[in-house]
Length: 143
Image (cartoon, rainbow, N blue to C red; front, side):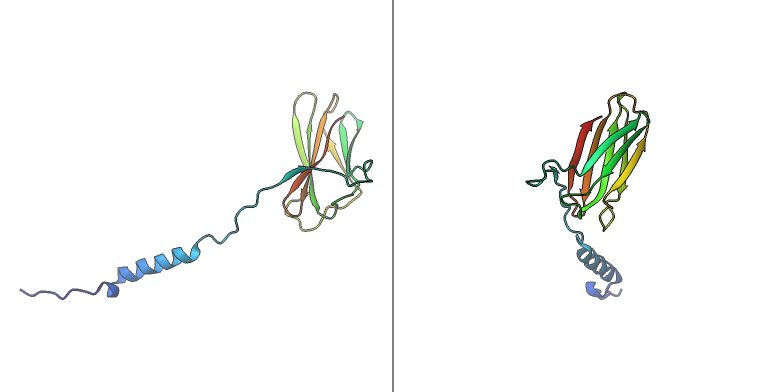
């Protein structure tokens, strides 16, 4: 009867597989930055611009609401205007101008028509999304 020599663990193929997987797992780690919370702050106009309105809503008839963006404070930071309209029956629809994936601001002096059944009182909320990820309510009105 012969006695076999013990095999050194570091020469065994499974050792190398386990070691390689451990190195890959350690190297992978968390490579993405931590998520930054989105700040939602109400829009405020600088002193002296109390009458200036960045965004307005008008209703030319019972089928259309038109959102108009005139520009103004922080206009170079706004990349999307998200409009939510809740009609008198409680139905809501949301439309966006621009994109949160954009790297350039939306054009000023733009008009964005929205079509629907707007025969009664309609609640209009417009949120401006900024290039830094923050957002601000720039219009909250009933027309």
